[in-house]
Image 1 (cartoon, rainbow, N blue to C red):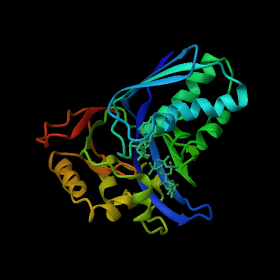
Image 2 (image 1 turned 30 degrees about the vertical axis):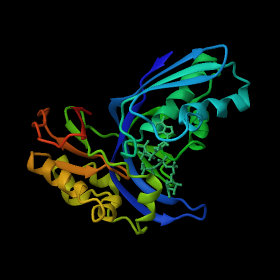
Image 3 (image 1 turned 135 degrees about the vertical axis):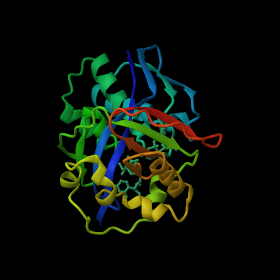
Length: 270
Ligand SMILES: C[C@](O)(CO)[C@H](O)COP(=O)(O)OP(=O)(O)OC[C@H]1O[C@@H](n2ccc(N)nc2=O)[C@H](O)[C@@H]1O
Ligand SMILES: Nc1ncnc2c1ncn2[C@@H]1O[C@H](COP(=O)(O)OP(=O)(O)OP(=O)(O)O)[C@@H](O)[C@H]1O
């Protein structure tokens, strides 16, 4: 079975309070971004994981695809599998790439072994692997709150919006990013501000990580300014960074931008 775990973008992100479990409550809108890895799951004599593409830091045994398999095996006595992950989506980018691999592995294993797990059950397993993972089970635009793993569906019409995502080759760890942010009351209701035309978002939709991280990583501010200079109607950091995206209205192809070597760029439609 071959699946293509996609990335996500955060449209606005407010860190609202500290939780007793050490995590933060947040409010954000998540949308799928069709920048994908490839993950193959096959029955095999023994469980193995092979990796190609972008190198993933850490031991292969800690890879989220294997952790997803072990989580289901503990409850369903699964037969062994061979997993092959071809990594394309940048890591430490705020694009949720590793989380998507985990959620797509859960979904693929449920299908392969005909476990018949409904989305609620898959989300519950996904939450145990990471805050971002549950979003990728249904993979539709949502308003996310609490740890970013409880959702309310929203309708957002972004069809025909061109998007450019730039990863400046900078790995920002999620834990480090959270440690730099002070929780505060959200300035706006994201559901209301995102319902307004794209051109208004620049004044009303923000990501709390941006203010906290830009003084330490000036490249984030430079990329955002460059996207606005290139005609973006809205530009922002995604999640905890370091990827920065620009939205360009009206099917307009984003203009070519000169970027240093080592940067990765995704251009397309949302
Ligand atoms: C920044 C976002 O990408 C926004 O969508 C997510 O909140 C990050 O989610 P994630 O990468 O799945 O994060 P996790 O693996 O669950 O947590 C990594 C670390 O981030 C911090 N963390 C994460 C989520 C959250 N709501 N509060 C936190 O404080 C914690 O220090 C945690 O140890
Ligand atoms: N399949 C995977 N893909 C990417 N990273 C993985 C994977 N499995 C485990 N990891 C670990 O997770 C870390 C990346 O998590 P991190 O939260 O920093 O970045 P991310 O995947 O870009 O997502 P986020 O949007 O949450 O920042 C890597 O350093 C790696 O050790």
